[in-house]
Amino acid sequence: MNRRLLTPGPTSLPPQVRIAAAKEIIHHRSDEFLKVFQEVREGLKSIFQTRNEVLIFTCSGTGVMEAVIVNLLSPKDKILVIKGGKFGERWADIGASFGLQVTGIDVEWGRVVDPNLIEKELSRDSQIKAVFTQLVETSTGVVYDIKSIARIVKETEAVLVVDAISGLGGEYLPADEWGVDVVVGASQKALMAPPGLAFVSLSDKAWKLVEESTLPRYYWNFKEALRMQKNNQTPFTPAVSLICALRESLKLIKEKGEDNILKHHARLAEATRKGVLALGLKIFSEAPSNIVTAIELPLGIEDKKLRALMRDRYGVEITGGQGKLKGKIIRIAHLGWVDALDIMAGISSLEMALSQMGFKVNLGEGVKAAEKVLSGSEE
Ligand SMILES: *Cc1c(COP(=O)(O)O)cnc(C)c1O
Image (tube, rainbow, N blue to C red; front, side, top):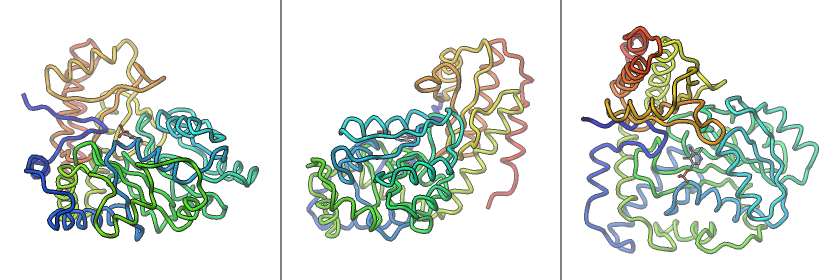
C-alpha cells in the first residue's frame, strides 16, 4: 500500500531530498559545507522574500519561537498575542514562561482576528514591545490577514512577529514588502525537508530590540548566529544532513518558481474544499488557508475511527483537531510535496470511509467536484 501523508507537518519528501539526507556526513567547517550553507542562506532569503539574513537553527519550529522571545525581550516586558488556536496559545505560554506580561486577544477558534482589535490594544498601551501572531493558525486552518496587521503595527513602536512555520512557501508572505519584522519558519512543512531545522528573519527594527533585550540566552544567541552566518558558519554543530536535504528542496522550489508553487497550493486547497463541500461536509475555518483544510466532523462520526479507516485501509494519513477541537474537526493538509492525485486519494478515501461508517454520501460526488478543479489547466 502506498502511504500518503496529508498532514500539516511533517510532510512527505521528494526523492532528491531523501537521497541528500542519506549521504555521508561532510564536516561543518569544510569548504564543501560552507558552499552548501551559502546556497541554503540565499534560498531561504528568497522564500522569506527578504533582504535580511535568515538565521538557521537546529531545532523544531518551537525552538525558534522561544528563541525570538529570549532575544527580543526583557523580563516583565509587555507583549500582545493573537490567541485564535493552539499555536497562538503557544506564543502566550512561552511569553509567560519567561515572565513577560502577556495580553491576549482571544479569537474564537476558526475565526480570523480583526486587525482593528490590534490597533485598539496598541493605542491603549504604548508599552507593548511586540505583537505575536501566526500566518496560518494550523490548528484551525485559518489564514490571518498579515498585510493589514503589518500596516497597523508598522505605525507603532512595536515589532510584528509572525509564526509562518506552516504557511511559509504555501501562502503569500512578502516580509519586506509588507513590513513584517520577524518571520519564523521550519523545515518540515511546505519546504519539503525533514523536521529538525527552524529559521528566523529579523528587520532592523527587530534587531534594535535585540540590542536592548536582557533575557538570558546561550544556544539561541541571535547576534552570535548572525556573526557566524555571514561567514557561512553556525556557532555550533548544525544538522548537516538536514541542511544538505534542504538545499535540494530549495533547488526544487526555485526550479518550479515560487509563484507557481503558491498557485499549486491554492489549487489543491480549492479542490479539497470543493470535494468536501460536495460530500455535504462543512469547512470549519472562516478564512480557509491554502495549506490545510479544517472540516467539521458530521454528527455521529467518530474522529479516531474515521482517520484509522482512512489510514489502515487506504494509506491516507490526515489529522484530527488539537486542544478543544479534538473530536470536532478533521484536517486535510495539502502542503509541500503533494500533488493532484494525492488530493484525489484524500477525497476518495474520505468518501469511502464515511460511507463505510454509515454517513450518507453519494460515492463519487466529492471526487467529481475535486476533479473539476484539478482538471483545469495548470500554470
Ligand atoms: C507546526 C507548527 C509549529 C511548530 O511546531 P514544531 O513541532 O515545534 O516544529 C508552530 N506553529 C505553527 C503554526 C505550526 O503549524
